[in-house]
Amino acid sequence: MTAAPIVGVLALQGDVREHEHALAACGVVTARVRSVDDLDGVDALVIPGGESTTMSNLALRWGLMGPLRERVSAGMPAYGSCAGMIMLADVIEGGRPDQETIGGLDVTVRRNAFGRQVDSFESDLHIPVLGDETVHAVFIRAPWVERVGEGVTVLGRVEGGPADGRIVAVQQGHLLATSFHPELTGDVRVHRYFVEMVREKA
Ligand code: GLN
Image 1 (cartoon, rainbow, N blue to C red):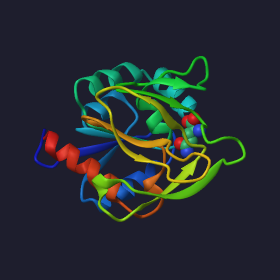
Image 2: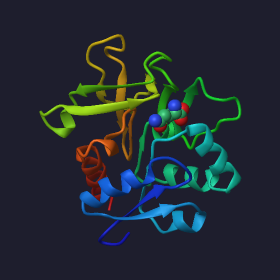
Image 3: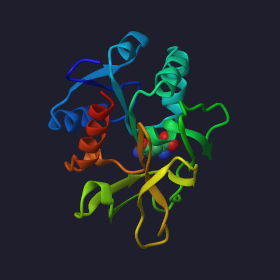
């Protein structure tokens, strides 16, 4: 790895540009990943929010799923928001039958977990690794984490309301995932935390 790591953004579908802006605000160089060559050129990967079934389809069709799995299992730092969290999960509930994930994160996530009535909502969360100030979390047809394996650290949960206590931010070594979209709020603490993970790995 070079002195200045290149952070890729998986650019099959989803809110790629918003992640690029957040990463740029953290002072890192980014590159879009659409091919195996692109993937070879990055040191870490952000998987955006969007639609995980579409991302799964495109990754399979473009021959990226295998290489993504190899890089993640070889220790490449990866961060997934919302659909990206689903892509990193080992097990999904409520997925489409043909839907595959990259996996690596020893969790079970439930797609569209917060229910049809509440497609999207916003909530302030305490995520101690990001500091004392709460994080304003935007959830859009979001998953939550139903099961965490032994090596997984819970970083944040919903506080109050019908989903009180649901796990929405996790880390397992080099893998980070949030149910919500920090790329949409201008608060780059989650991205900065990920960039620190990337730099530590280097
Ligand atoms: N519901 C979407 C999915 O299953 C995720 C939504 C999002 O990323 N905002 O992939």
